[in-house]
Length: 305
Image 1: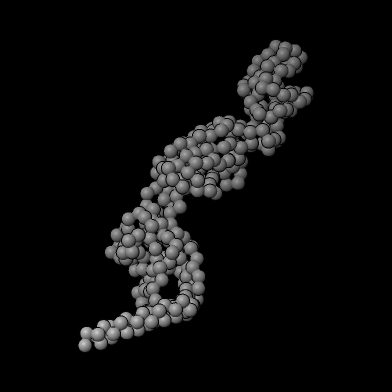
Image 2: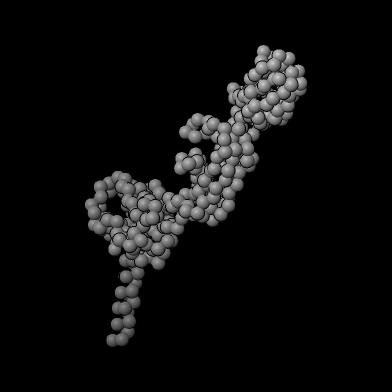
């Protein structure tokens, strides 16, 4: 009797194994109900009001339950429950909150899709990253501190170098207006600026740049750095000077141009260097001295006694 029972048990186990094997082989031959996934946004931050988004292409219609799972496969949020989704592409978004509306902890999450009619559950392998902490600008500087974007290839731009505490895009502002958003999300890098705001060159002067950052989840840095730059083209160091008739006048010229033009009374010429030396007119009176470089000019009054 015992031998008969043992034989029956073995036969039952073999039958169960064969059935399981058949089911496994059939599943291997069955095409996946998901034809493709596309990551629209993999980062999410409730604080920045950004969402993660996945676009999924389904092979045929089914009643779907879409859930967000944490690293321990615990369900955090339900994006859809037994919703009839037609064949084709459908996008699902997650705002980084739980079913109860609370903010989920920072970390990696995954999306799980259950097909009620096909009795299959698929875990999307691509991770969703929840990051709620803003980046921090650790350091920033600018080189050179004085530049002239006049197109002569002499100090036309400045380099703004920075260090962040994480991968993020640098953003630079002037008076609340954004002038740069870094292309790359590197924690340490540099960007260049050519002295423009809204596509137009700024006038000469001293400007304070605010260096901030926005991370991949959309969080903006609260701790930023400020750097100052001076934008110049060509400038005479004095607005007025008095000289004797036919004396040699000397006046400082602030420029990085190798050459520039000057005009005093009816005379004109080309000069170079940071000190302009000219012979004063013979006749007493008031004259206008102008220096010009690539369309930019500066003037001073010359009083001859």
